[in-house]
Image (cartoon, rainbow, N blue to C red):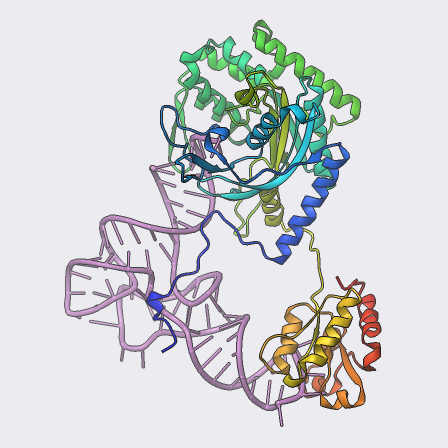
Length: 488
RNA sequence: GCCGCCUUAGCUCAGUUGGUUAGAGCGUCGGAUUGUGGAUCCGAAGGUCCCCCGUUCGAGCCGGGGAGGCGGUACCA
């Protein structure tokens, strides 16, 4: 009994939040990466790759007062008991690399990389537990000129991806937010928790609107599913100041009364001037509600958001969130070196971007044709078929001999399913005469549309030509050319 | 984590007030056609009705518990 009992059979299943990419998606992904890479190269960044695994402490992800890594990060212990983790972004590993090789790197050090990062969180639309990021950073550049450049590069990248007019790069400054916190009396360690709640509330402006944020600054808010989110419980005056900030932004009078706030406003003004001078004002905008992740950013922060609605196959509007983001992190390298090393950079969430575009049916197909399939008519003649394949390959044409065990009909079906442009057929009769049949499957499919009767369809052998074996390559080339294909 | 919805064939879904051998479309495979992909026709395979417990003469359907999926929300370094 060859069959395993069904109940005992191992179930093939993909862990949630992970994805298999088949040829179409992979080709789109590669094409996208290539477009991004071209922009980053043009800006003068050099490639750098670091491993997917780092020491957990290098990522800065230990739970406070605990001996084990934070939740949300995939971790395991090495045989010497040191904690290792899968990277959850590309910035922290870059900081490690720069710190480790600081003396021999040119400063500012400008590099880019793409790779998979991992987050052990609940997946959602456009949120995966393994996803591709494309990241660029300038390390060792203190001026906000570096930040302005990153914003412009973000815009150019989105343009290069064909998304002109369908995104916005939103810029803010953590110092401005610090200033606002100070203005409402939330400076100092004892208010850290409240500050977090307030910043998170501000971050939700685009999703919840002014009223939603106001609720979260006060008592709290009940969402559509009936869940209640506790608010920051601020005084009415404080709420008013923060709401004022969201409505008037950098014009808020209280802002300039604080050192951090004044600095942040000045930096944003510089960035805006640079953006303006280079003609990016339509794509890059100052937005006081941008917060970004709350750990290591110290100055300007930016975020790229798609400005169109994304709807899934069920017709529900799905939230994909921002597709890229970044900011200045002057303290990250310092963790390894003591001295401050100013740095700024951003990452594109390639997987999320593609998921969003895919949900909209906005991905262009790459349309790589299937290989030319040389049919195996006589199983004892595979050497002859293999030789034909080799000739086609030597001519730069994607080709293969049918390697399955089925008959001719199945082989034709196979070629059809592979999207092959044509097949090469040689039975005993053709072999004796030194010829082959070359069948154009694309032309054949067209011809089939007008033939309803199977007998006729079979007899007609549409789009099939008989040529001497010496002309196989030329004939196939002709068919590829006719359909505008290059065979690769 | 919290809230809501969902779970029947590979996929999308029917399934009567609880009643015999649980259905359809699509897909897959085979045949009509031992040497021709489409269309058509014929046929076949394919099911732990998510799991467990309970109610009942009898459960895909009712009750309880659990798991998984989707979405929202929280968190997201």
